[in-house]
Length: 334
Length: 271
Picture 1: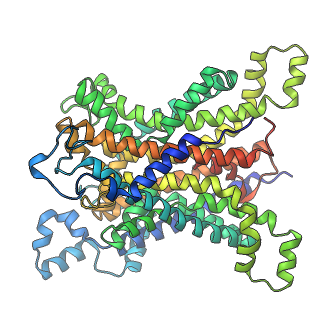
Picture 2 (picture 1 turned 180 degrees about the horizontal axis):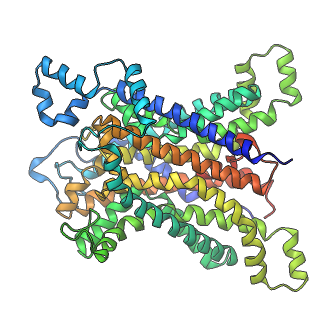
Picture 3 (picture 1 turned 90 degrees about the horizontal axis):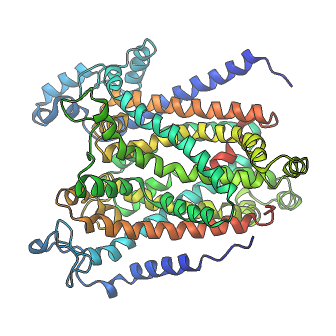
């Protein structure tokens, strides 16, 4: 059954817009219902010494005196025109604050993601090729151990070894102050956080590839290919690996937010100036406008990646429709 | 392939759990007492695993704090599993349109970064306690199990025995508990065990970041929240020893979970 692509993508767009809208409502309400004083994030210590009159004036200036629903209406009205307000803490346009940080996170998460993607594929194939041999069993054991180590603790151990004891790598930040444009310095600062990002996720995906391949080599077409005289290597790479790539792609699409979410914690441990540290600050110190945009951005990313995965899955197997299809991947995810 | 029983993991995990339950028989010091004369001591005869930057005995803290970390792991899992079973079953049982809406809502829920939900909920609840932290972790980690329950229920709901129970007037919860749950419990067992692992990791990560249990409430996570100061004066034992216990526990739990998963799949696989 062929569907009109306009209707197909139109429906997806509609779902996307509705989801983002609901997300914004939820985050807006939770953030404002949570106790805490947004004035502290704007005025710092001074906010605590304000008189009632000054407070009222400050709240009116920031538009915090109205009911939440009215505030949301005004926020939405400005947001659709691209004005997301100012960050209370940084006193700058929210988008500018994020613009300054997003590059760092994309560098850490993006390069990390590509490394995980490639290394997991290679490692998985290598293990499946040497199934149940010593090397495979050793890698499986080591892999299980690494996948059990919480990311924050791995970061601590690496800092302890390489920054405190050996003093070869910096323990925090994205660059040495005064060397903002020094590429070598930036890379040096990236090594430890990047190692944690990659090690934290690598085995999970490598194991997935390994198991998918093991299922694949037991199918009948492999037997047929072998009996026709195709070499083992050729069957593996030209048929088996090719067959699992689409599934792998859809799973990796779902994993994008998962891996980026993982960098949040790592960023905090390494005091790495990215979106992670920013979202942590904004949620803790009631920087409402900043919090909204970060939530919407990451929410949009999740929904978008899910849709990409869904589309890939539908292409592989048109029988998969509706909300069921990401299931297989999510089952393995956790 | 025959799956070996995870004997070593079970024994190790059993020892850790027993040690934590019976911590008062093992502890050599009061785990909450701050001995300011003996802070940041390396492991020695008196303080087996050394002392932390506030002068507390790490050996005693590990057993005492493990009790809290493990209870949060189990409590949070109980909460998330209960939510998952009810939500998944309702979604699987409900008519198609309601199912669709529920699944969309789950997706939106999933798209809010978990860390953010936890920070916000924690702020609403106020000061973190064992219960509040378990609750917060529990209600943010049910979606994975719920999806499996839903799929299973969709397959099960049209079987004859469910129909029979329904036509005899069995209510939704009666059918869920008597007929559906026994049928899907084995397929979610692996996820449930993995949820315990996830909850223990979440507790330690949150407490480490200062979002979970406060420093006075001893847990593996809150012990590690002293890591910043420990890094400054190179006190490796404050970081490595509690972490080693944490990782060992997580590994044992993982091995148990994997055993359950493979055993459950044995009939299906062609290995």
